[in-house]
Length: 370
Image (cartoon, rainbow, N blue to C red; front, side):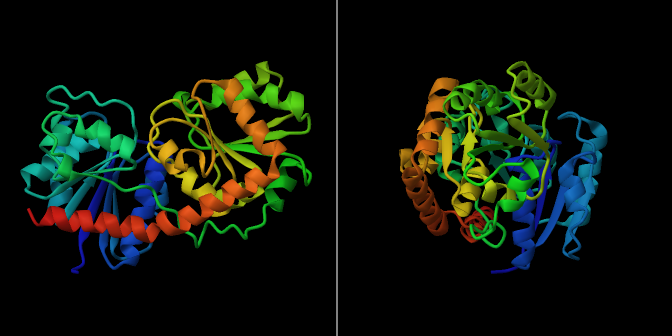
C-alpha cells in the first residue's frame, strides 16, 4: 500500500468526540507512515492541540470558516489544496464540507464525508448535495447514523460505511489507579462516585442527571457526582445544580486531559443524551477502563451496549429511570463487574484504534479507485 496524503477539515470550534476523533485519526495515520494536513478554525482547541504535533509529515492550516460561501475562505482553500497536493479530502462539519468539499470536487480530489451525529439531516436541495454529489464515500460513527444518511435523496447506500470510534489501549488501561482523582475530589474508598464526561450542551442531557441526583442521594446520601468537560451549557448547568442544592455533592472539573485517570476513579459513567449521539468516545473508553455504564437508548448507544448486555440502558429524558439505573448498579457490585467485563471483552475484540484506522484507510483506497 502506498503512502497517502490526507487533508482533514473541521469548521467546528468545540472539543468533543468529533474533534477528538479527527486528532486521534491524524496521529494514527502519521504512525502508519501517511502524510496529514488539517484545515481548522484558528480559535479552536483542535488547532491548539494540532500545532503541538511535531511530525514533519503533518501541517496545520488555521483558516476562518464563518460561512459556506465566504470568498476569502474559498480562495484560501484553493491555495491550500494546490500547496498540499493531498490525495484525499476528509470533511467533517457542514461549513467545511461545503467550503473544502466543493473546492476539492472542482479540483477533482476525492472527498470523504464523515457524519458523527444522529440528528436528522435537512435533505432538501441543495443540502442533499453534501451527501449525494460531493463525497465519493461517507463514513458514519454508527449504524443508526448510516440509516439517516442513506435516507438522503441521491445517496448510494453502498457508499455509506459505519466505522465506530476506537480506543487506544496504550492510553486507556484499566490497570490505572483512580485514587488520585478521588483524593482530589475528597471522595473516600467505598463512597459512590458517579461521573459524566463530555461537552456540556443541551442534548447531552446533563439536566436529567441533575434531576436524578436527589433521587440517588435519598438512597445513598454519601454519593458524589463529577462533571468533566466544558461547552455552551456550562454556566447554565452550574446554575441548575446550585438551584437543586447540589453544590456540596457535585464538582465541575471543566476541560481535562487526564480522562483515563478520571475514569479509573469512577464507579459509574453516565450518558444521559436524548439526541445527536452516534457512538460516543466515552463508551469505548469506559469499556477499556472497565468502568460500568448507564446510558440512554439514543442513536447507536443500544447497539454499542449490546442492548443491555454491556451496560444499563434507560429511557431518554427520564430522570427517574436514569436514577433507578444508577441505583441498580450502586446496589449490585456483581452486576457492575459483570457488565464491565463484558464491555471490556467486546472492546478488546471490536473497538481498538487499529481496527478503526484500518477500516478508514480501506475506504480512502476505495475512493481513489473511482
